[in-house]
Every structure is written in structure tokens, then in C-alpha cells.
Image (cartoon, rainbow, N blue to C red):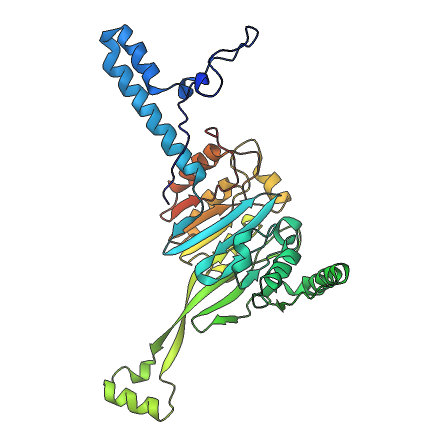
Amino acid sequence: MQISLTNSPFKTHHQIFPFHQPFFFSPKPPLPHQLPLQHHVNNALKGSSGYLSEISRAIDHEEQYRLARQQVKRKGVDLEGLTIEGASIGGQETCIIIPEFKCAFDIGRCPTRAIHQNFVFITHAHLDHIGGLPMYVATRGLYNLKPPTVFVPPCIKEDVEQLIDIHRKMGQVELDFDLVALDVGETYELRNDLVVRPFRTQHVIPSQGYVIYSIRKKLKKQYTHLNGKQIEKLKKKGFEITDPILSPEVAFTGDTTSDFYLDPLNADALRAKILITEATFLDDSISVDHARQHGHTHIFEIMENAKWIRNKAVLLTHFSSRYNVEDIRQAASKLQSRLTAKVVPLTEGFKSSYS
């Protein structure tokens, strides 16, 4: 994504305020990065011996600032041929969108981009993950989009039905959607080449993650010795000559402790092309025990369980709002040294020291 900054960050105060100020106005001196490049040049000219080094430092600083601002403003990430959008801030909102699959994992506060996704997978009933569901259903109806399909853990299905019924009654509107209670280990066909299965996670309330699989067909072993014409004859006679092969593409954990890494039934989540998982806490200021008590994962625990991760890419989400973009990237780089998978943090919605 190309980012253009219409206002250069290197502008002095006289470009913002009138040149002539009242005598009592005493603006604060600008910070170094707010000064124009010419300012650094003029300073350098005062001592010709340091001219080149001063110019070099000024150019490097301006370039670093520009790159940092680009990263702050970037929306979404591209991983393993998929575009992943959305935001995930611990305790505030989680909604992860994959447009290629027309789906969203959790709905958060119902970001606009999520409205155009046909499927929503709810991991658990905390408001920062499910709060926007009535708005999602209502807005799709307002836009004359087909009723969406919403997947939930079976234990909350009745509560979700009551939640939508309350909004139907209060708003006196039709809220059409298909609600599917999908349990751990069950499979649902999203389209002819995609299915979804939940897997078990551990949070402070009932929760589950989801794995989306692609489907391809493989010739059955007993027919591999046949030529093309023979195989075609069998097909015309109605023989089923292929077996479906499921390949895990994306796994989403939602909120969970690190115990899910150790569950052998979760092997597919740990070998999907992309693992989207939480890392709520990133440093020593919060202990691992604290993270576990609140049903979350500390990044130190991901490092400890790195040997189980067989994914090609890991997207880290759900960071505590106490962290800024630079804190998050620094922690992710430390985890990267432990993994062969590409580690990417989702920083949408977090503040940066360059903001």
C-alpha cells in the first residue's frame, strides 16, 4: 500500500502560525524532528568541518521518520497469499477479517469492513468480541445483503438468539441471520472448496478457536495405476475415484491461555499456513501467572512453546492497550528469533511514539 504524507513533519512553527505574534506569545521550541532539513543545513554551514556528517544525519533522520509514519498508517497485512484486516486490542475490540474467505473472526464493534463478510466465527461471549453482532446483522439487512451465517459455541446459542430477539423487539425490525452452533470437532462446509472446524481453547469463560481448511481431491490409491481413459470410464460409470484432502489454511484462537499449544487435538491449528493468536502481555511488567489467571497468553509462553509451532506465519493479536507500536514490534522481533515461521504483529489501533 502506498502512503503519501500531505503535510511534511519537518515544518517549523512559522509555517503554522502568523509570522508576527503578540509579545506575550512564547511558543515552545520545536523538537529536532520538527525542524526542516534546511535548518540542519544552515547549522552545518556554521562549521564546515562537520558539514557532511550533519547533512548525513539529518537525511537519515528524515528517512527514518518517513518510514515509521508509513508503518503506523498501514492498514492490514498480507500473509501467505491472503489479506488480513481488522483490529484486536485487548479488552476493547477484536475483529479479524479475511476478505478472500468472506469471513470475520469475532465481530468486535462491527467495523465497516466486516459488514461485507458472509460468515462470522464467534469464539466466546465477551463484549469486545461479540458486542457488535446486532449491528452487523442489522446493517447487512439495511444494505440488502443476504442474511449472514454466524457460528457460535453451542453453549451460548440460546443467549445469542435472545440477544437478537431483544433488538428485534426494541427496534421493531427484522434481523435475519443463520445461527449455527458448531461444536469442537464438527465440520461445516462454507463453500465447495472450504470447510471450518472449531478447536478447543481455554479462557475464563467457554471458548473455542476455528480452523479453515481448503479441500482438494486426490486420486484413490487403488486407481493410481490406471491411465486417463480408464479413469474417465470409471467416472462415467459413477465410481468415486478421489478422496477429499483437507489442508489447514488459517487458524484463529481468540482469547486463550497457552494450554492450547499442548493439546494434541489442536495439531491442525499449529500446522495451518497462518496461525492468528493472542499475545496480550509482552514484558516483565505483567507476570505469566497473571496472564494465565485472566485466561490470556504471555508472549514468553509462546517462546516456550515455539517447538510446537509448525505454521508458515504467525499473526500476533490482542495486545494490551498499555503498549505502543514500538513496544509491540520489539517483542515480536524477539519471538521471531525463536520461530522459523514469519512473525507479524497486528498493530492497527495502537499509538506510536511517531504519532
